[in-house]
Length: 418
Image 1 (tube, rainbow, N blue to C red):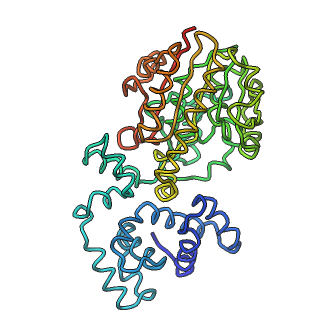
Image 2 (cartoon, rainbow, N blue to C red):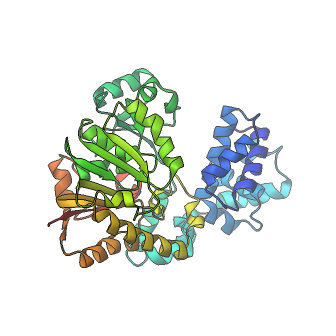
């Protein structure tokens, strides 16, 4: 990484702005760049990469720094994790800083406590140690410290994967097929894909492979009635619409008008005519009750801790707490219970999170099944095998960045029997 003094100064200012983490890091960074309109594209890219790198390694950096000032964090990160030579920083650092950084550079990461190596807070370590060995925790932590690759989903209404791969490679964008999703593409590097003709024409969407697998678990058919219960900006709903060949009807429900507004331009590009976004007030909205017992397939990707997405959102390690997870668990149980009312007999529901924790995953599903004996659990590995997807994580879908190079994702498939 080659940096100018201007970029170094800007990175220090950005770290100072973001580190209290009173809001998501990406939104704080957007505000920071808005307040620094003279920053060029290269400056922004360099600063963003540094900020996220520091968030990924913050426990180690703060553990070693006597005073974890934004400047100290920046210098320690550049020397330890970006491999900058002290000579490259000579005119930027003092003699005492040079001595300290030489010490940092020599430290063996593998000799540090497990929580520091894995970059997990104590409360999360405590939770993980209930179901993972130390070796598994370290492997998971190290995988979550790597930046996530950029995955695309091919819109099968408008294009085929092999065609898109050929076009991307002709443009000089290194791309290859994802190992599990039949319509996924993984890019090398981070090209500005939202300016690419394939994106602007609706032939591709940005979507992590783990999220694409959910669509194949739900497996909606042409002509069915489908609900995406917590649709957000609609990425999964758009995929479901394409799997249904734009036949039948999909309701994309969400409580956020802003998120649903973000779906509108995506829907316009997609070529779909069967997707209907609708804002609801909560999981008990009267508009939902009109659909009780009428829906063939329901996707319930609930609000969760997001701990499976730490490659993209490393700030969640500080923004989540045991208390916030307790509140999320109550919300998850309420949403699942309400969404299940929509299903007709024989209908399928997929409950999903991007969390790693059983208390947000298996525990929620088990409690629901014990309260609702007319629902049965389906085997996720069998459902994916029917779709010719070679992915067997057992009865539940459990994707891990360490094992599958995706976000950490969980899903359970349930069927209403009567």
